Image (cartoon, rainbow, N blue to C red; front, side, top):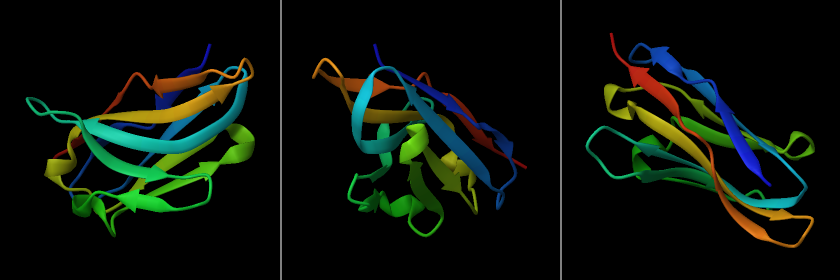
Length: 120
């Protein structure tokens, strides 16, 4: 069984910063890629950022230059540093990963979601 647990959401003012974390647990062999998605009210879930095991990062255009995805392989944890937040960044943020476990299964794993609200 593989679980992803997120933390770090909350309320921020426009121009402020938040850092999200996603910790994976279970009998994990590898995690690749690690990613973040978000879903605003009344909208579909959308891709935000992902990071491959080789260190290649990808971002949606709207967050380039403001958000940074990083990982700590020793802790099976990845992060989303969000700077210069805007009201349109308000959403529930979900972490996602393809996780290979010790029984050789590949798990398409999602976190439970964490609310990010950007408002003055």
